[in-house]
Each structure stands twice: as C-alpha cells, then as structure tokens.
Image (tube, rainbow, N blue to C red):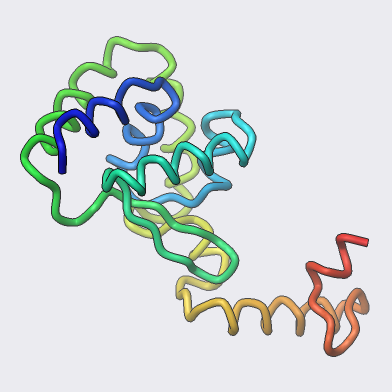
Length: 155
C-alpha cells in the first residue's frame, strides 16, 4: 500500500470519521448514515474510495454491505490509524460519533454488525435473507408468491 494513497484517503473529514468508527468494529452503510447524518450515496462513495485503496474491506451479508478495517494492515496504515485514534479525542464531532456508535453497539456486541443481529445473529447469505423477508411479507399479507417484498414496496 502506497503511503501517498493512504494520505489521500485521510485528507477528507468524512473518510476520517468512517475510519474512526471502524476502529470500533464492523458496520454497515445504514449505521454510518445514522451516526454521521449523511446520505447513503455520499457514504457509499467514500467507502468505495477507501475500499479501492485498501483501507477497508467489505462483505455482502444479505442485502447489506458490512465494512471493516482489513485484518492485515501495512505498518504505515496501522501507524496512521493509531495517530487518528489519538488525535480524535480533541474533536467534538468524533466524540459525538463515538457516543452514537456506543448506543448502537450497546444493544448487540462490539464484533457483530447490528444488521447481522437483526437477521437473527447469523448471516447465511443473500438468498436466505431474501427468502426470509418474502415469507414474512407473504405471511403478513403484503407480498405475493414469486415477487420480492422489496419490489412490491417500490411501486
């Protein structure tokens, strides 16, 4: 990983806030939205930029994308993340982000993204998630067999 690429990623306040939150464990886009108060499009673009440059890793869990810091980090990235962790203590916005994250994490656990917990604690992939939502929607009288709950709500 190129040192210049790391610094290019760190030169944006939103990306710094995202990385700071990921120091606490994996999160999905919807929780970045809730914590940062930014639209999904903006957060997704920043997460994509960080991912392309190797500063975050992502995995699909049902309909959610779960983001985390890479398990193996080059020394320059590790050093900059440690510096970020030290520097944010002085910034109000980072302290506020951390407080909102603690409220979300208090319900579940530090290592399990809230979206995964809402699926019952296990992410078995997109097919099962879609099937589960479809069965629940059909049972509630909102869906029809053969059509997804999501597509019905878009009409």
